[in-house]
Length: 345
Ligand code: SF4
Ligand code: SF4
Image (cartoon, rainbow, N blue to C red; front, side):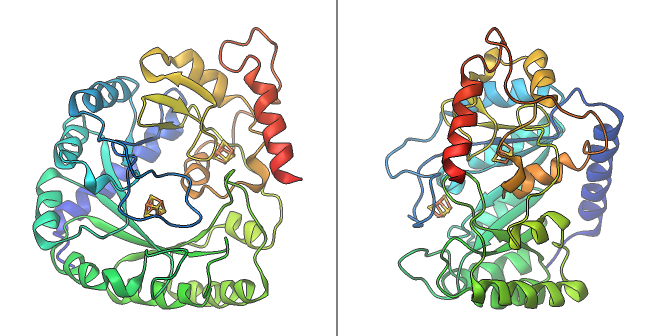
């Protein structure tokens, strides 16, 4: 990969500043996830984050949202979907993020990584790209397949100036769990980062790994000791179905903005708190920072867990059930608690 050393050094320095700012103050979001395009070119069987009909969010609307996130002091933005590369002004969106001094990341299925588009992403200032690959060959559940996009991975390896991470997955009924090993090895071979995701159910929660999945996980775990950077303690807990002890700071340090411009905890807890971004304030964030999330113990959302590491050592949280006049949750506090209990039973 032609990763110019100056851009790599600058990226690492910016990441270090993100952590330092995060440790120094709890008053700003560390990561915001934005959705400029809900539509996707694929239709993965386990996915609840796409449709086949929506239009792109107009650039002017995205600008208002990104300006507001910048005004909160947000350190990094990840663009996701659907498939965000279907947005006709995706490069302008990335440039705008960078013009605010925020770190710009993109999650894509990789189908549009032509040399021409990689060049445009370089010029727009993209800093991180994540591609999740579910299997080696397409099947009924998923076409996010190594064989289909391997050509594009080659282009990325040669041309991209941004960091690339390949996420292989396990769990959620993926047909050939051993594919995760093939995908991870290919990622390392191409000079990319490699992580392992545990696929969640429709509520962002874990379903225990099966016998074969567990065997593959153990192999990746052993291999990972030598080559991968993805080994986090929470993944061990998830793989073995153990509750994980952490403090989810969704709604504060991590916020998810859907295509309608509403703030949600995360992709799997949409509707909570469900407040328009233009009405979302630092007061909301402070309440969410200090509020325990009842879905935390079996959560599989890796990016929120990573963000939480900055604050896990401080500020113990209050139980989710809050007084009826609570400005953020109100009655919704009971609804989300019920929903999580139902999802677990
Ligand atoms: S490519 Fe991603 S967004 Fe599209 S259907 Fe598959 S998992 Fe969902
Ligand atoms: S614990 Fe946090 S990130 Fe995980 S599902 Fe619940 S709200 Fe989302």
